Length: 490
Image 1 (tube, rainbow, N blue to C red):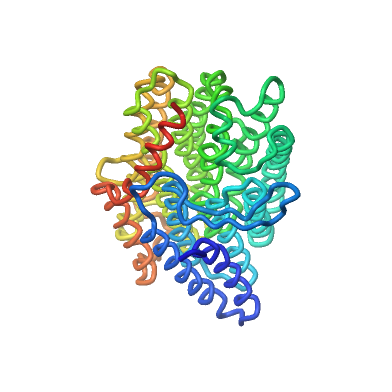
Image 2: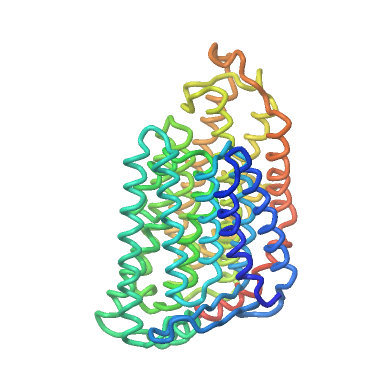
């Protein structure tokens, strides 16, 4: 089990090679086969992970580039394991969502490997390598297989993300020249007493913040996301929202907040303001959309805004108790996982509607409940999960975030609560337009769920209910990590 993490990273790369030399018609089958192997490796990591032990586990450390202090250092804590499990769930879900050829499948597998590396790397050079490695497959997948506006959307995605990455790289080079290390744990220890001083600290903070804010994305760095999600093939949209967007939130937890607690506290009200804008303005923007993919894309910004609200609330207030901090952090971690599952499911349903109708506008449907009651029923569950209905997975994370945030940032959290109202209006409006009323003439031959689609949807929906009714199995993964981070932020 010593090299289990390395095996997890290399398996999708091996899968991409096999896809490349295999026949076109076998590409998706080979990719799904390697997804099964990576899922087994992820479950093996979970089984070997000691949920009661704090800190890094199953670590692998090897000399790599000693001249610049770069090591091959990988390991996992509760948050890393949660994101590995999420990635292992989203990718087979995305492959089952559409037919794929060799090039598409190979690029998706490379992106999967990059995500595993990002969530396990503990040295900045290695982490940045994987972080950037995810950018190229995503760009090509949108550029080659995307919709009508794919060229503009892919270019915008690449430029925004690449500029943010350059800013982050320059910041870490400044940190390395000042402190002589790229190791996250060492830098976090130095951050307790001040990693850098003066203007250099603020410049480094700004560069890392910019790179991560674009990736989340946080308002006002979000404008690339609706175009990218709208133009991307449905499976790529599922991966972008379900897994890739979590790299930004993970970066805030792993890099910015532990390394720059003093700067974060000083800018606290401004950061909270950006999180609230992400929540409220994105839900209002979703309300204004008629394209279903753009609607779900804006709601993705809204839901990740809740994560940022919880993080900024507990790290910028000196008045937060340990209980409030633990509640907010637990809510953030749960929201990361729950949003990945629910948002991917929503994009899957939008893909089913588009496959059957050829269009995806709210006004292109009507009365679907008469023709496809199963599709409407299962899609309604995903919508209710996204708006945070008790009993489904979306409720748990949002409730804990609001519980922890209200105690320390009541005014900001009160404004953010309007996002819940607007989200409910968006989904109820969509349900009315899609499912209710007289059957649209163009939907007279609309097909209900097929057997293969039921086999995909039912397990994912059951997981939503399981996380909503008995979420303790998920909390057990990261409880110790939350306690450890609470002490770190204190």
